[in-house]
Length: 418
Ligand SMILES: [Zn+2]
Image (cartoon, rainbow, N blue to C red):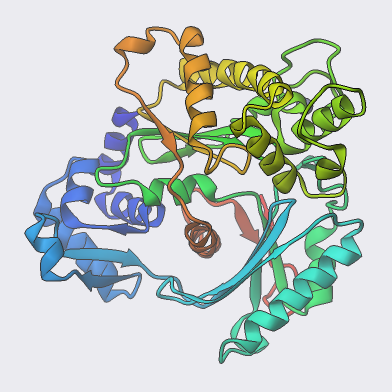
């Protein structure tokens, strides 16, 4: 992959630095020089040109940072206009308005138990947008576009999505645009970019985000290039069938990894078991009418208190996820794996268990220079990554995923995932 990066640089150091800044969001001269293998003076010249063109701004750090030997000046990416961002993750809805200097002007997170219809989802987003606008000085005219991030991928006219989002269909951009009176663009996810941006300098050359939430996935990037695959379906490890004829998965097949280990699957399994006399401190009411996020939390508390049912259930989950993680490491051979998603986030003992179970599946596990750690990206980081990713895709970046199809009048769809 390093070779591929070098080939890009031979072509144009300017666009290689530009691409790297878009991906990294915040960088400095030495990091750029090291990552791209170019002279410090070349890197500095290009970053200063980007600053002059108002595509980056310079941030000078205090003397404390300098004493620690860190570069005093960082260059931060800029976007053209403020963008509204809305992130639906199945169990919560977060909205934000991000300004051209990538500062979050307003933010609001709402827990959602269940969304029954697209109309209900539109109402929730409209209400969220209203409250965001109220807390800033911006009006709708300053904010002609909204990025809507949902775990959904359009493929040959059909929308592939998680089973917890049954209301998502091919019409989602048009219907949301009409309902909100601004142009709404569907973007699949930016969490991997946010993770890359949160990593210390120098960032890993090969990174995997192993995510266990409403689904299970392992998106990856190497040499500064995100691996999306030809159909945006790269990294979908949750749909590798582990047990033929196992439980039904949201994808319509049986026995997928996520049919055992995702948050909703975990809660459904526990709920079914608890209807039998299993002898557990967990009660089915703790899991019945709640979001999978809170249900998993209840299982975690029971596990921490030594509940034998929770221990047995999770032993099976750790074994399955350990297998999945081992598979990912054997396939991708990353430097770093960031473990994320509400099933494992904030649960260091569970992460340790998954890592422990993965070891026997990994080829030459002891010889690798591999780090596996909890993800660092915050929700704020993900919102900003969405705003940048979208803004730059619209400008016709190399990895363009959107194409202009119409003017930018409010209510019209101006871009569609290509
Ligand atoms: Zn599946």
